[in-house]
Amino acid sequence: MMGAVRINTIRKFRKSIMFTMHLITFAALFGIYVFFWKGFYEAATFDNKGNYLVMFSYVVVLFLFMKLYGAFKIGVSTYSDTMYSFVLSILLTNLITYFQLCLIARMLLSPVYLLMATVWQILTYVILSFVGYKLYFLLNPTHDVIVICSNQSEALESIYKMSQKKKRYAIKSIINTNLPMDEICRQIDMHEAVFLCSTNENVKNKIMMYCYESKKRLYLLPEVSDIMVKNATMCQIFDSPVMLCKNRGINFEQALVKRVMDIVFSSIGLVVASPFMALIAIAIKAYDKGPVFFKQDRVTKDGKLFTLIKFRSMIVDAEKDGAKKATNDDDRITPVGKLIRMTRVDELPQLINIFKGDMSLVGPRPERIENVEEYTQMLPEFALRHKVKAGLTGYAQIYGKYNTSPKDKLTMDLIYIENYSLLMDIKLMLMTVKIMFMKESTEGFSDTPPEIQDILLVKNDSDLPVTLPSQELPKAQDETHE
Image 1 (cartoon, rainbow, N blue to C red):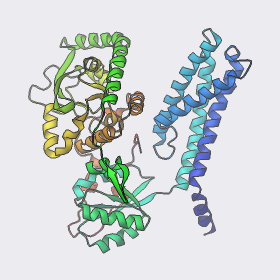
Image 2: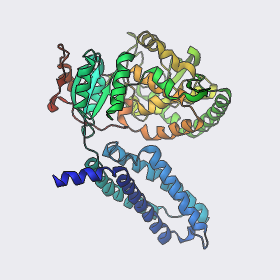
Image 3: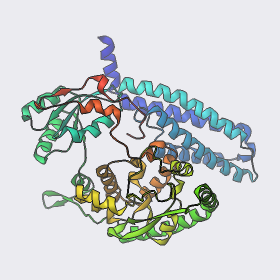
Image 4: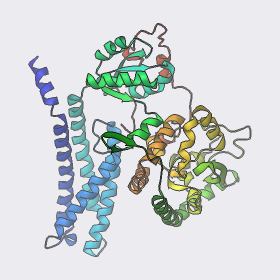
């Protein structure tokens, strides 16, 4: 009893405790760098205060990469993801640092000692992040979640995703929104968190108000209107607070800067990537003598069509029997195609589209005409993503997958449009480096996963709460983001 009270007391300071853990980890990584720099790169040191600038630059660069790629998300993301994020962060930081030290020394230094420092930093992070994960889950116990929805089948995808984070969410019950409000509130009281799926505004507002009053965690699937309101500007008209939704998308000045950046980066990209593109073209041609490029009409800003260029990754005439979405283990994909799709280098020819102005470096993924027509029938608001040019990379490409649902893609694209800034474009371009070698970001479309069939068996014909046995929850897998 006393132990439980002590743990609950400690949990009040969990943010401070985890911040201290992050600080210790970062300090250890910095200390290792300083040790090897001072000990083995004397030629790249100063006799005065210049050393402080070198150390400061290292701290800034390492912090920015770790923050950008999510290496600080101990407990929030999976252990494998934070490890991957850190390894990428430390490699990029130490690569930049190596060139910096060579410039200071005015000679080409041996990279061996910096590589040794990198190994020690990775080992240190492995140990300290493992301790951090244990500490995080001790301070942040699993939340019992109740799912409230108007249609169970529509909620299954969200239930499946949440159930993969077993250490964070334990889905205990599913109830229908057509239950009396008193019963819904009583069920909410029995749980620590609420996951509210799409429902009518009246019920949604009542549940939100009750969760606010009872201090319950509330997870919402956002609608288009939610995204618009979230980015509204608060202003006053006399004594009345008013929310202003400008709904203008990207303004002229932003569009001009974005176009200049597209021209500069696509030009540099084409020059740098040309040797790799030549090798890929030779490999594709050598395999089956077919065309090197795959060309297809896609939709961009204001619904305009353009011809998208990619390296061909499928057999010749792969769609002779009609358009068909790529699936996992698709036998139409060639061996060369599997490799270039896995590393995403099949997208490199789109730098030509960007240079011409058909696309942008960052923006919503250009969809084929058939998909746009199909998705617009299901979601009339899908056309809103065409307020900006289609992009080579983008918010939905970074935080989603190839097989992400149209509604989730639309939501993420609108988040990008409503929050647009030059800084966001730069951030998403840097994030693209992280996802290039992540298999889940290139997954094809597939049938309902076998694990979800157990959940599909759950029925709620009586509109009474349904408890999901723990063995029916899908097996936990690594996820990429929070």
